[in-house]
Length: 247
Ligand code: NAD
Image (cartoon, rainbow, N blue to C red; front, side, top):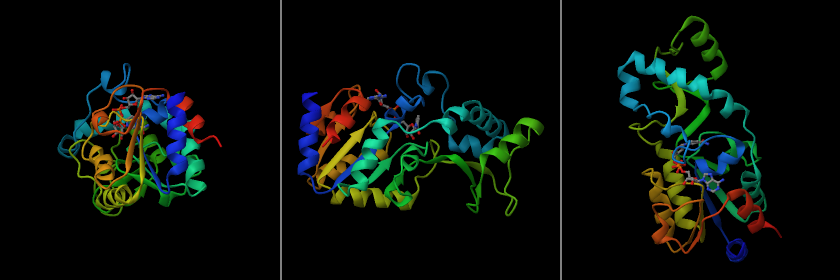
């Protein structure tokens, strides 16, 4: 808990905190991360974007997996970690949360949409890869499960995919630019629940560091960027974060 106190002091001294979150912040909400024992990738390999585009079988497999795991994502609720971040943002102490997560739990915790920067999209809805039209998952799910139908855009005939960024898919330019700007202008950058191995997202903490921010990493285990951190806390998010923001 001494480290929670260190973090609390750092937050107190800071004028602009930026948070950067990964799958680890949502495990306490019941959503498994990718790399922990029992995580998603210990069970199945990810499907590459090119395979989704090129193969009907892969598109079918993508939707099959989506609907097999959908309930966990759609019924999850924010936990103490999400609410701790929300409190610092609503108090004006932190400007934004940059997230690799696709679960919408930062928005569900009450953080306004414009203060959540999603680097890897959002898995709670789908969109057309050609014209960007938004589609709700429930309609797609019904047709897929009852008639085995793959979704196609009713406006342009494009392929519909969950609004997430797959491996091999280009990162969305606007959120990346906003994340880089936020990272360059903060004085305290706090990474939470990420192994920090997924690039280019994992470059963003280094932008903050290069621009003079203090870098904190809160994660149960070692991360790929530990050598750059000013404070490393290897502990549970749900214990440390609420303690670090307590007044
Ligand atoms: P990751 O699985 O690579 O790393 C998660 C890290 O969080 C691990 O190092 C783990 O030890 C740590 N962790 C888990 N629970 C914790 C807890 N309660 N307290 C402290 N530490 C904890 O995840 P990543 O770095 O975010 O990268 C994986 C990619 O997977 C991301 O791009 C993300 O888009 C995607 N993803 C998202 C979700 C989600 O939206 N909730 C879930 C799984 C994967």
